Length: 381
Image 1 (tube, one colour):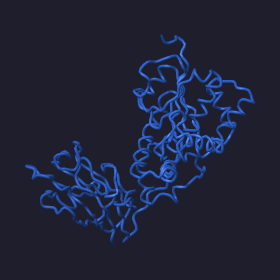
Image 2 (cartoon, rainbow, N blue to C red; image 1 turned 135 degrees about the vertical axis):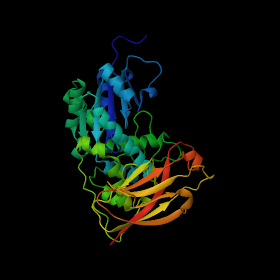
Image 3 (cartoon, rainbow, N blue to C red; image 1 turned 120 degrees about the vertical axis):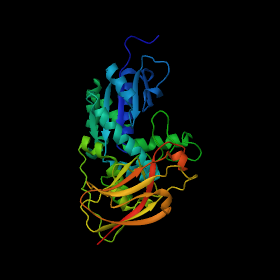
Image 4 (tube, helix red, strand yellow; image 1 turned 90 degrees about the vertical axis):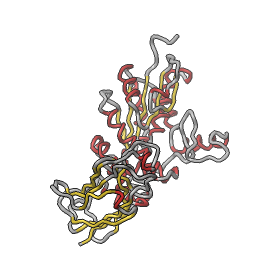
């Protein structure tokens, strides 16, 4: 039977590339030193559904990048504690691309999800301890002492020294080398493999550089991360440069993670290397004060059947009382075409009527309502 006095539940939640794995191992080391290795259970979990089916009275150390409501509830209900590691989301994305070689589409999806969930943890009433990657917390012994105080532990100076030495970059690299030699990462180690206990990956130890996004990501990828993570930036005070108007005559591609990504507003689905679909009845393109005319490169889905009530689309100026272009029935529009309209103050709006679920259109098996795919645009004088 579970004990009536279970060990604490500690959530180590962090943005990708924010030294959250260092934190996870540091918290485990402190608790295992105080309680005994067999009195501490550790694992990755973004949701309480990932926890063991049969609870016991061991202390629980959890690592998460996007803690769901069930984890936040568990901590609040059970008197648990949360520790949060943060990093500029642009550098978080750059770290995953640079260290692990992940494709940008996967990276953007992961950083976006983490950026959406972590502010909810900060606002959950748990009063988490917050550590910023930019402060270099993982390189300082004082951080380990701070963690011990937060956890209510009192290791002596010699134990803190020993625990910290086991978590230095050199010690972690040595541990990863031992894990590799033992075959933990398989016969062909890559960044998708990790040790189930420590969660160290091959090549896990970074260089601590700040601002690496400038040399790792494209301009469009940087802009895409910025637009996806606005709530995280506001919650944790990561200021970003304002969106600049597109230069006259410059091709603002949305394909291949081009610079046009930064201008996508609400109503656009997550882009990929082929562009960005609109989703829903309205999508906004931010023009940031540009003047002149805008030339849009658009693509319609290849429909598998002729709909009885075909989708219609139109272009509007923000606040306009009449469309700049359309409405036009999809059947009267070429699959790939260019449209030029004058730029008015505010955003350019793409509006849609009679949208059909994607599975009927032939885009994917879902019921998402896609309209047009934006391939790119350019501002002309």
